Amino acid sequence: MRKLRSLIIPGIDKDLLVKDATKLMPDLSRRRFIASGASFGALTLLTGCDVSDSLSAENLLTHMSKFNDMVQARIFNPNTLAPTYSEKDIKRPFPFNAFYAEDDAPDVDGKEWKLEVSGLVQNKKSWTLDELHKLPEVSQITRHICVEGWSAIGSWQGTPLRDFLKLVGADTNAKWVHFRCAEDYTSSLDMPTAMHAQTQMTFKFDNQLLPRAYGFPMKIRVPTKLGFKNPKYVVAMEVTNDYKGGYWEDQGYNDFSGS
Ligand SMILES: Nc1nc2c(c(=O)[nH]1)N[C@H]1C(S)=C(S)[C@@H](COP(=O)(O)O)O[C@H]1N2
Ligand SMILES: [Mo]
Image (cartoon, rainbow, N blue to C red; front, top):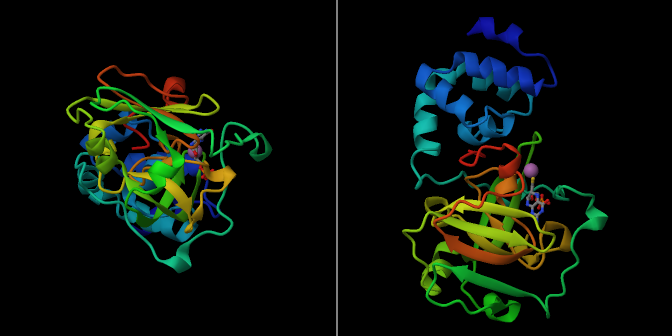
């Protein structure tokens, strides 16, 4: 393992780290990792380590032989929980990210806003924010990982998406839940991920009403997927068997991915 030291340069060249890690993976995992896009974010998500400093990057490489188990646990078992953290780990201020600058983020009027629910559901009623705020609240402190190469731990409160899907009589044998956002951003979740215990319809960040930057009035928090699969400013949810892709999914980011 001493040999690996020379593979890493201080400050972390992310492409290099992905390349080195890929080389060290067992065969089957390597093929799956490459098929899923072989991104730095996927590496972070799959290993569960923050590999953004040179020490943990080196540590990660020395453990690459365990990658088969990690891949099994994190990609192929839909019940595996994302790691959770404590209050002191929360990143403040939390980073903003979107395909535009923060000033251009949608400024949604919470009184006018409604969540449209459509597709393979028994009750297609639209929901007001007041109605959604009455749903039972759970909290999570988890790591958000963006493919662009940053990650941050945050705290999100809301109601489990799976409880909401059951409430509206969604066909949970359907393949996808597709989300549309106020500025026409879109993203799709496969049903096992939508039904994952930690996938959350989120109304608060750090116990405060979701700020505009982080997706007011509602985002979907998915700690088992990369950041781009966490749609903010959600206005519509559709349960469907047809794959509808998404903003980044359509530009070649692997769908499974993030993972
Ligand atoms: N509506 C919408 N949701 C979005 C995006 C976006 O551009 N529009 N960007 C995604 C990406 S790539 C990331 S990393 C996260 C960033 O969320 P944050 O601003 O709360 O950190 O939002 C995701 N959800
Ligand atoms: Mo992202």
